[in-house]
Length: 390
Ligand SMILES: [Zn+2]
Ligand SMILES: [Zn+2]
Image 1 (cartoon, rainbow, N blue to C red):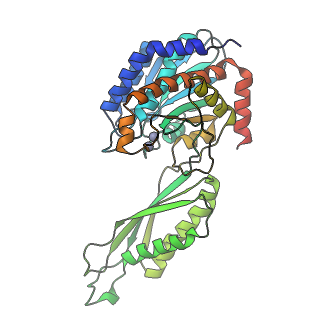
Image 2 (cartoon, rainbow, N blue to C red; image 1 turned 180 degrees about the vertical axis):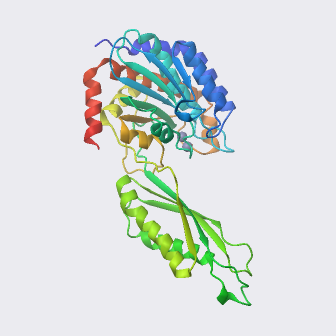
Image 3 (spheres, rainbow, N blue to C red; image 1 turned 90 degrees about the horizontal axis):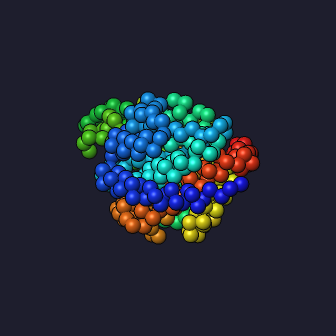
């Protein structure tokens, strides 16, 4: 098998100026979930200019796009995923400008090689990762159908092949009681705030009887309007997560929903329980993809840390994708200390070190994608690992 990496690295270098200009432009114009009109247009334009067939607004999402570059003859379809949404009020504090330009950069670096490689290369613009579940919506619309592997890299504070993302689900709960004068006639009231308090008490009792990877956290959204009136309406929002999606959805979620109802029964209030329409799945690891990420990351002179499968982590819509097809969610450092969703991480995402990570990430993604396209044995290994982990 010819080693394509020297040509990939040279292509990334040739595109470096344009890629970093694009990364800085997205960083300087943060757009929140579902409003990423500029970022998605800039990325789609850049890919179109290098010969990709671009479809804007795929899957019914105006800020999603699909850019396709056909290879030479039949083979697998490999997708590079670009996230580009910012956080409300914090700019690119999750560094999605880096994700976007690593994905698009890998596409630009591979484009000239696609006349020789079999299969098909897709660069997918996936909006609204921060709370919108954009990838889940695209999955439901069939945009991931026919894709054999999905690859992306998130900026981080270390170089690591995978992130143990947790399955996650949430509820919005409103208790409806009956108001009454709190001194004159409290016996005529039904206290909705008591239902909220008892729901949280029940959750706290539940904590001791759940698996150690479970996280349950919530807030009170409304607790009444005046201290001298028995609260007629009170509410809460709750999130529950676990490393095991089946455990979360089949065992834990029904127990939590019974607690919500139990608090209503104890007080006489009525519970209005609204589960979130999108539930995030846990990451399905794929060791062959992770090993390819590690090889190419080390090739670019970066040491990689082993993946700690029980490290504290968050949730993301790539988890849902990873349950449907082989997926890579690698991590590359743009800082040694700053955590995502902080002001310091926002600065790192536009820094010289962030720029170096854009170029390394583009080269790593292109290297992994080239292996999958050119080597049927590698693709078979990735598929087998996906099936084995199901
Ligand atoms: Zn984030
Ligand atoms: Zn992020």
